[in-house]
Image (spheres, helix red, strand yellow):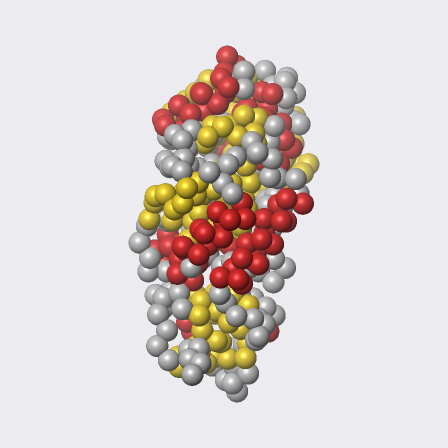
Length: 398
């Protein structure tokens, strides 16, 4: 006898977002649970009148109580289903020309690729996975097996860590999933530069892949420029600018380990002799530079996420305003500021308002030259605007 799937019955009127194919079901929308699903189990989501709405992964510890796998009532969530979704995501990157042997890209971008809670990044012939939701975590072994088959990497490493996972009631996990252990450093070509990636100890999955295209755009403003790369991490923006005929670059980051890697990467790209590396709190160092009367032709601000939840928007906005006020005071008149936010809770309109307020408060005039966003391997599903997190502005500052 076929076992009936557990059901989530929604409260009256709470099915509207699902009918628009938004993939999240919040705990407050649920009237009752029929059956006893465990973390990661597949459940059917039905309206108050019993109409099928979606098939989803259940997460009893999360405010996002279910993440939708499919809206098609006849589609079964099994290994074949996951294979289809993963193959579709990989083929999309292949069509974008992102699968060269030495390149790096995001292969799977969670809900936007139809695999909620799964991130897969590719560094040359190694993959790194993050299982950030209960459903993806429950299918971890199957996903690893399918990726080994369709991508044929040397190895797959897991970096399932961070606040998103903890909100799902899952502990952090790091280690080899399949194939060979990754080397301590993987060299890739990203944004026209040679980058050295440490997938075991680096940030996120080893590197930030969402700025490759933006580095090229920012570098277009670096001709014969003195560049300040704040929150430099391993120096991606500085390297792109120096390869584009910038005169010099000062890299600031609070992590000595990151800047040590930046020194190796700038050397690998033949630009280390034009770099200065400063290990310091970026806010403090920018104040020190301002007090010393230093100015630059191009300042790049690519800070970590300041806003992790909706209740942090006000405090995070103040942080973005403060750092941009400092940066604008360091730009020579007629120079450029490239400024970014990776906080999904700060949308593009709010970010622009913050930048406008910063310019007003320091008495500078700023013109928007370009608006920047995340690249094509970080797609945004039209029904899931939450996937759009990266925004940037290139400004002329007078």
